Length: 401
Image 1 (cartoon, one colour):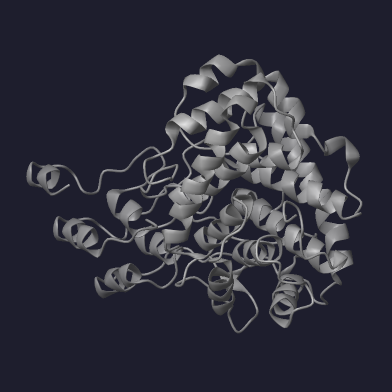
Image 2 (spheres, helix red, strand yellow):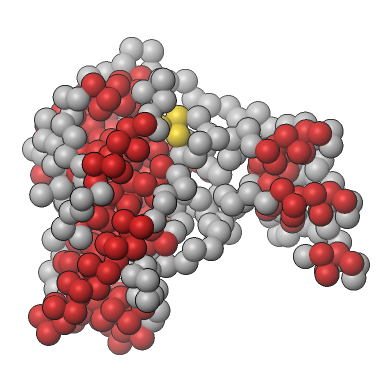
């Protein structure tokens, strides 16, 4: 970047959505103060706004009141956009009533989204599918016709392209997680996925990239990718490679045990991955660390600099239940439940604002909250998973057996 600036690159060049290098730096998950100082010294303008009206300080504040936000304020930057948050319900519902309101919304967005864009995505399809499956298994009323929706789509698309799948590189994702939760059987296309995973695993046991995420929090990290890949291999490894798959899962579990999760979500998937690998002696320590991150309001934040929200709180409760076996009756769990119930919106959803740089065209997926619907749908899915355990009293939850 310094070389480009020295040779005349314009630090205020804006992309097709109005984003500048300063905005990207301000909103990055892995914060780099030196990069921001270099841009500011080269004349980067903190007052510039993107196509939605956000400036660099607005982007920095999406990660909380960080040192980058302080640096921008020291240069005179002021927020230009005040987010309008929908009001939470005036009288919190019971867990059963909250689920009764939320489940139809997830069913609607899962069905609407797949019809509109003819593909499966993590926020509007995979996570709602996992939540709906868990709710139905717990005896809750979830539309039966939508259970298995993922499998139907997969059979029409990726399931027929197993040869290209075989030669792709990369880890498992939310799609594979949803399919394995739905009990999708081992077929030739899943054989290809399993063989791809065996080929793609790194020497230290991980899958995925350690690089920055441009679409937080849903983009995969090494910890999350490794957890998904463990779950997929455990479910779909073909008979001839099952011994090898068990060895690779053991290697992946070692990577997870040695990792230090930088935020709530990675800690959640560290715990889930180890559970899917067969358990770990490290689980009590990870459980206690996750419990220590609970805030006074009963919730969890996505990052240390961010306030509590339903996305991180639902994740944390789900991991405590499904991975660590914490009973829903435990006071810490009940505090988290009360946080979720208190912050549910009247329509049955939970609102969590986006903090990702969107690169795909926006489409209306059938969930409330406009441009914030994708992360809000994800948050609502995690909240439903957490409340399902609270209502049923089942500490295992989906995949917790």
